[in-house]
Length: 101
Length: 125
Length: 152
Image (cartoon, rainbow over all chains, first blue to last red; front, top):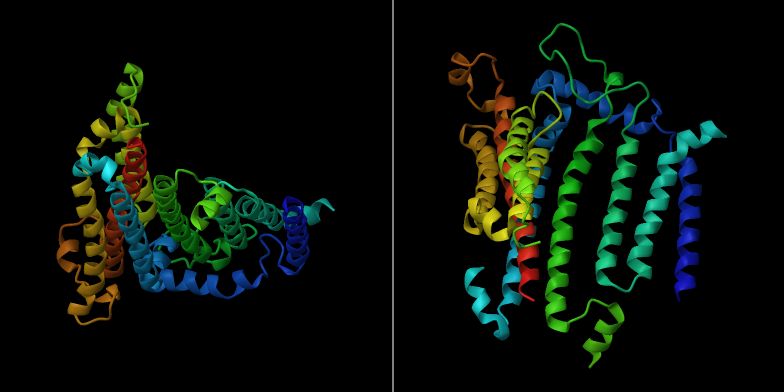
């Protein structure tokens, strides 16, 4: 079983390395990611948002809904941990510990 | 040969990290090690995105002199979008790890073990 | 992990030096999020690291006294509330949800050294919301995961 897993994983690594030969080189100025969206984001940040930090501009302005969703995810994660651990703490044998949660 | 490697090493490192993370998730029996594998897998994805944002001769995506007369040249800055996506992905990853660990604590309290096979046996009873 | 670690040097370094310095650095990263690398997520992680350091050195009971669980929960909710406020404020002023272009900043620019645009003001509100949410949730995660361990 373990041998099958290892063989599968080595094959997967070889497949990934082989498939990456179709991707653009590292830091290639002609890569599609650098040709299409990046210049527009620079221009919009400079002309419309007018703050120096492009990451903040994209994070809070262009992708404001996305960040709102991320904040909800973080909040829900905290809430889930709180509820899961407080519920499983209330087993009968440590009832007295439940009070000072 | 060495230039080829220099242009490709983010992809090779991503592939290796992905496989290590998958090995942690598939080949290990302890649930804690599986969570660690998940974290390694996630860092591989983060590395892949960040290496995709690189640009030859570019610097941080911080404009200088926004109100100045000179126009910012897009070729001087790396792509900010992957940085934004990974910034949120890292924090969400911490949330995922926290929820996973809380489930593990809850499982341990219920069954007294975190071994996958022992858990399956326990649940079949 | 949950007990006080008995070392005078560690206590002094953590309480008098490291924790205040890290909190101040976190606030700096937050306030300069618009003009330099930084922002709400990063500042939240840094400030949460300071409080986790206090809990690591002083123990959960003593280190957690300054930031009890009810306050953390309130702060996490407040972070989300501030974010929603930053989204709804433009709605009330006649714009779209999360469209900061309509926030009035003239009253602020009258007595500010550096003028601020409305979009920068909107981003500033959002960063505060993200900061409060991330920092308090990270400390909540640490508190609950380590406290749960001490029961067994």
